[in-house]
Amino acid sequence: MPERAEKTWQGWLPRLLARLRLAETQVFLSLTLIIGLVAGFSAVLFHLAIETLRLDLFGLDEPSGWRTVLVLILVSLFTGYLLFRYFPDSRGSGVPQTSAAFHLAGGVMRARTPVGKFVTGALTIAAGHSLGREGPSVQIGAGLASVMGRWFRLSPTNVRNLVPVGAAAALSAAFNTPIAAVLFALEEIVGDMNAAVMGSTVLASVAAVVVRRSVLGNEPLFEVPQYALEHPAELLAYAVLGIVGGFVSVAFCKGLLRGRAFFVRLPSWTVVFQPAMGGLVVGLVLVAVPQVMGVGYDSVSDALNGNLQLKGFTGRLFNGEALLMGFLVLAAVKIIATIVSYASGNAGGIFAPVLFIGAMVGGATGTIMGNLALFPTGDAGAYALVGMGALFAGIIRAPMTSVFMIFELTQDYQIIVPLMIANMISYMISRRYQPTPVYHALLRQDGIHLPSAATRAAAGRWRVRDVMRREVDTIPVESTLAAAWERARKLGGHCFPVLNNDRLVGIVTMDMLEKALAEGEPERRLEEVSLWAETNVHVHADQPLELALERLSQGPGVLPVVNRGDVGRLDGVIDLESILKAFRFSRRF
Image (tube, rainbow, N blue to C red; front, side, top):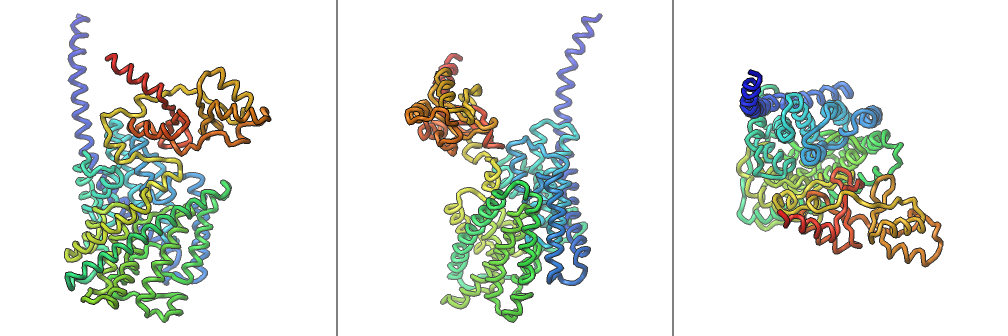
């Protein structure tokens, strides 16, 4: 009887597991719809929170003068403390962090991340920092999706797949652009337009936009007049706009990265005060040009409809009526204010500033072309509209998203062809002079390297992880030359990674040690002399073996394998001996 019961149990177990697997698929699909509703509501609530806080901070009057400076400093001090003490993952846009969570952390995002992003992002944008709400909405939606997936005990794969689902839903509600939101999640978060999660992102995006339109209405973000191509030759003018947009995109990306590098180099004790430092600078800028405050969509709408006028000190300086000067001043000042706001560590995105800058650059280009071109051209508003897409394609590096986003924002078919021309030219120029996309470059400043498209496409081929040695003989950086040479001699190798508190600082070879000893001073420590090779030549465990062989030829004989989430952490090494050993082992089977 016990034996029969045991056989019955053994027969039921596989069927039970099969049912559980089917149940998880059903739970995932149901959860996709729920996440769409929850993420959509969170994006709507985030928008309303910003508007409410703005009224609480400034009242019904238009913010101006020294009150703006004081509010920015005080709010930035408060959010700086929150970001330093409780929500360190909530700094910046949120899009790079979401991509890193998807590719490197299995989609796991802490529950405090979306909460912190909501609170600090709403305060930061409402106080007047030149940042947008769309990037934070993406991180909030993705974080909620990750938390809900773990609550329902989904498999690690399904938890990971929920991240772009939540991101697409939140962006769809924030922008009222369901198609562009799906494309952005696939282009930027996943990095694969043919990803298996496409159906789930579409479902969540539609659910989110239903929530958005139920609460905020179905009006497009910008009301624009109908534009038409005045003359076939006008496409040349839009090509010129693409060229201008490409170079402005490069300038913005490089300025943002250099600004952030400046704040990163400051002493660590200043981290909590850096947002307030940025708030002081931005506040002073707003005294002169209040129109670059916050999201700035009102000024974008004015540019699209030909109603743009300068305000504040610059408005009095130029009498507020010089349209070309208004475009140029607002574009330049918005770039500066956005770089300072973002680089100083505040919580907010660059979507809205990019659209603002693009509208001003496009308007200025259209005004100039209207005066110089030998053929009829459209209004400056048409060029402002195309400029928004051109800057988005050049800075964000999502050209397909930018085309559909501009169309969905304005619901204007007439501008599609000029938009595609300007977008692709801007994208190509930006890619040529700023090879690393800005979101990836920002992560690299934090020591995080996302896998490239080539790495993701190398599935099934030999990878570094297949041949690398995980047990590695190393030498501490505090060793003397004599001690390092003695340890290297006993270990019997030729090249050794040098570590400082378990973090890679370089590689030392026997030849380098013998040469240093021959020059005397054997008691000098390794950290006092430049003996090791630069660590810029390295690989990651998921990269193809062909790349490792190419880079191995550039080094002293040992290639460090470093972690994508922390490039200072040594995961192993690869050399010719380990490669040959792996191939010999593989031929036995």
